[in-house]
Length: 315
Image 1: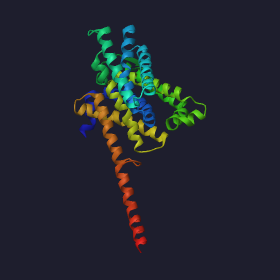
Image 2: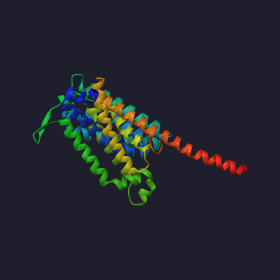
Image 3: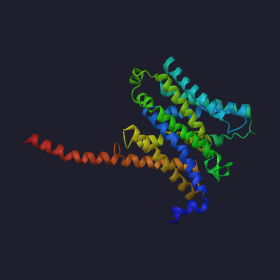
Image 4: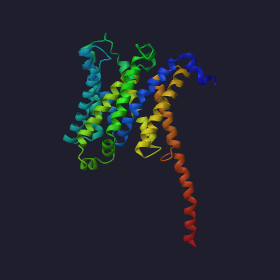
C-alpha cells in the first residue's frame, strides 16, 4: 500500500502537477495521433517532430525567449515546409514516400543542429538535451502563476490552452477529418479540398509537437503521438470510441508515468512513455477487436462448428 502513496508523500501536491502536465501533453498528441494512424502517416509525425527544430532555432534567434509564441509559429512553418518537401520529393522523383520522409526529417533536423551551433553558439539557453528529452521532471522548478489563489506552474497553463484548442478544433472540423481520414475522394466529392486538409493537419501536428517540446522533447513526443491511437485501434474501429480510448490511454500513461518516475527515480517523460508502452501491450493481448486473446477465443468458438461441418460432410 505504501507504494501507492509514496509519490504523494515525496512530492506532495507537486505530484498532481506532474501528473496533470503529463496528461495535458499526452491528450492533444493522442487525438491528433489517432488521425495520423488512420491516414497511415505515423512516420510523417516522426518527421515533423524532428523537422520543426530549424524553425524553433530561427524563431529563438529573433526572440531570445523559449516561451515566446513565435517559437510555435516558427515550428509550425518548419513542419509545413517539411510536409511540402516530402510531397515534392515523392511526386517529382521516383523516390517512394517513406524514403522521402526519411530524407526530409533527417536533413531538416541536421540543419537545425547546424543553425543552433552557428547562430546561437554554445552559451545560449537552448539546450539540445532539452529539445530531445524534455524537462517534464523539472516542472516544479518552473515559474508559477497565481490562478484563483493557487500557484500553478506556467507550462501547465500553456499546455492546458493547447489541449483545449486542439479539442475545440477537432470538434469543429470532426466531419472533415473523418472523411479525409478514410476516403479523400469522398471528402473531395463533398467539396472539401484534400490538399488543404492535409497541410492544415500537418500544421496542427507541428503546433502540438512544439508545444510539447519542453515537456517530453522531440523524440518522446513521437511515442505520445502514436502509442495512444495504436492502442485504441486494437480495441475498436469506431472513430469516436477510438478517440475516447486514446484519451483514457493518455490519462493512464500520465498516472503510471508518475509512479514509475518516483518508484525508480527515473526521468518522468520516459516513464510516461514506458507506461504507455505497457498499455499498448495490454491492448495487443486483450483488445476486444484485434487482441490476441480475443482472436484465440473466437477461433476456439469456431473450431467445433468447423469440426461438426466436416463430420456432416463426411457422413
